Picture 1 (cartoon, helix red, strand yellow):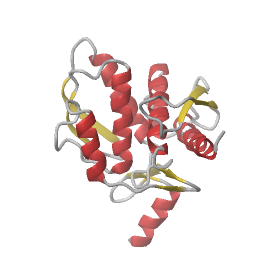
Picture 2 (cartoon, rainbow, N blue to C red):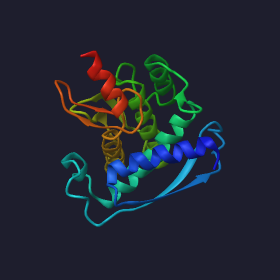
Picture 3 (cartoon, rainbow, N blue to C red):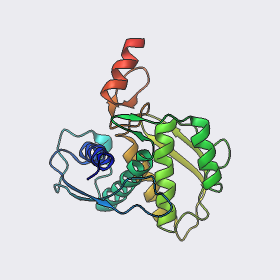
Length: 217
């Protein structure tokens, strides 16, 4: 693996371990970059998870304990890390971007899904939203899905829609729910692997961002 592939594999393993518990077996292999995304690190993941999630996992995670939910969450995690990898600045940084720039890109690339003003989240979860949008497109269920609001609520990405075609509503809804599920392990500030943090405003934060936030209080 290249250094960028190793970094992506570490991040993806951490995300999926947080979702499915330390007993899950995670195998990751690099894939050739897809032509439209030559700057991304594309990884193929296989997850074998215990029949039951560990008892100490958060109840919010356990409520998506289904095979379909797991498969879709893994797919969104793959896409999210690939999207994020395009901003890798070795050895450990990220090329900075802004909410305005990422939002404009989503509204341009997925105009029907994200009408202007519907995105109310920061860069990290905007990239989760892009991963979900690409997954909808990859499953051919994007057409007709229109968002009214995409925001953070109770430390989870919440996705509200005004319309979904009846024929594809079930699969599209499952993908959006899997994106919400995956967001529960994505730091809202930096986009790295994070955990649920209690406080006056519950959030998903990594250890570093949580410590930074506490120092500012």
